[in-house]
Image (cartoon, rainbow, N blue to C red):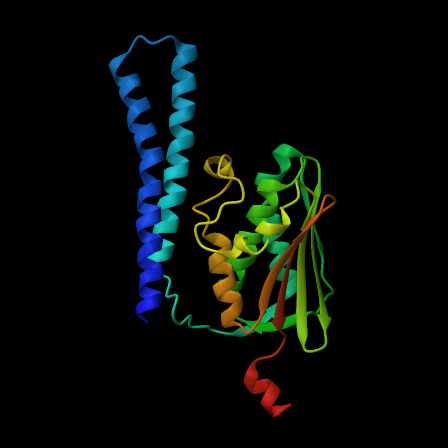
Length: 237
């Protein structure tokens, strides 16, 4: 219990420190705009654009802050139900369209009709959302992000494949650790506080499943393996 609380405290301190950067920028640019009312229009448009971008970043970090403070790292309570996997993943792909279209990206969902699993739909949606956000952020323009799922024995295997710069082999394991960012220079624009995949791993572990990543010069693939049935169903089968 103490270890879990320490991990949460570390996350809160880390994120609180991270919030200061965009907040300082917002205050700085707003001060410039306030002190120079007759600033040239082109410069004003530029400063307003930067301020808005930093404000969005601040909002994202604050959302993650609340996510961490209410996230119990010791015991994740699951509310399981029957999930239509194709419907769920297609719905998520549709919701990402505004992020994909401007750069010519697409999502292709290849999941058999009727494929179902037992799980906590809300928490699994957060897992898939985190994986897809990373795939969008680091995939090439005009590329396709492939989402596939199939049954293998008693498990459901879900893969998320994108084409982009490969993840170095030594970093494939650390991407699921807290505080890790694949590319710190791009995190301000494309990533959060480096917590999304760590939380995803916690949720998948609570489902008695696994999450892993593979990457080479051709593609990067995240694989989620989940038991198809609830434990009580398996005992009664």
